[in-house]
Image (cartoon, rainbow, N blue to C red; front, side, top):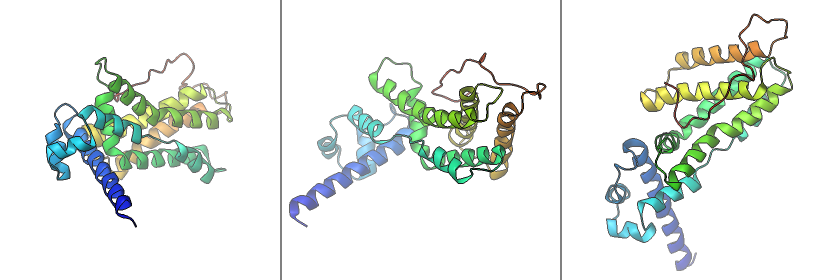
Length: 227
């Protein structure tokens, strides 16, 4: 390995460390309460050296937003694994895989949630809000397509939106807002209640006594969970 290559790799690794530590600080303290000096200290750099990598905190935020995105690939993969099983089992598997994504990307979720909900007319806030919305939008489309094949009584897209909005809000309120990731029992009980509602709306039409989520409900995309 040549000297130039080694220096380039070291620089890239240091750049990754800066973004990783900055993200952790933003998630813990908030964007505006975190200074460039804080980030430099977390990485073990002087503040002056940090500016050689990123000219401003806004540049660090932009790099984080562009680098971190939420793929929805696990929804299709999970549904493929449980194909042929009862709908309740399929939805439970999807909910569990979604929880795994939220748990793995807890810092990103906390950061995007807090900063994306700000109303400041700042392009970076808009981009952050879009990234947070992507956590749900792709998953909703994939599940809606799956539910549509069942000819549910409710609108498939609204059913899928209710599913992910509800379980996502529950996990965020517990793990990020209250800082106590839900126990297995609490998670299972909540998921079962949401799954039961979706399954009821996918039941034969003659079961009209069950609550229906239909096209009269207007979904509003949120950048923070329902309280």
